[in-house]
Length: 259
Image 1 (cartoon, rainbow, N blue to C red):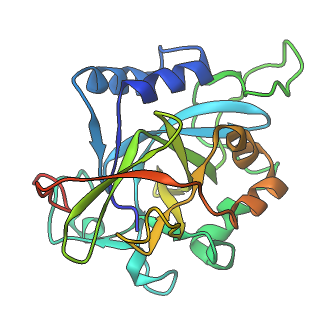
Image 2: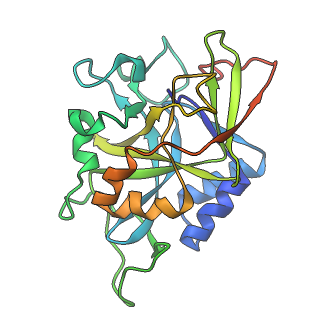
């Protein structure tokens, strides 16, 4: 399960390299927060995500967690808490679906549409389309997109993520070769609001001593495939993430964040 991660100025710099611009309101908020230090992201909170459509990279702010329905997914991927800081209604705050299992996501109604996004998917509210993706795929002068589909794949930028063992001891995981990595994610629109989940997979040897699940981590050269290549994205669902660096701290951090 992935229930908390953090971002910092290295994440901001990586996003700027992808977009080439910093004037989006989403980026402004992130820059201001990261300048003060690392920023923890918890379920129910907003986060800046990377999306792709027709070869372009998009930045969009979304809320972490789908409204949960017992018939749609595994209860172990649901974040439950009597109360915590959120703008969601009390009914929706109680149970949020925050993770999708890469092994079974294509079979679940909650995730199937996002994984197999049609190229002709309907568009929603306007968003700022930024420079062409890492591998240029648009003809010069092609107009920017007017919006984003109602569901699809996304990438969640992070500097690290936290996990807790059975004794509630916290571990911090980071990439061994890069200060920034991307977690594969999915998004959908619920009642006029875009929400996202993080895809998880079986833990590799670096995470398994702490937890049986881990985020599906994308390498830099896999990012555009995940965002813009349906066939390639399907193959990435079966990948085993690379080994991570683990650091353990004696101090305890609440699993549910500050109230």
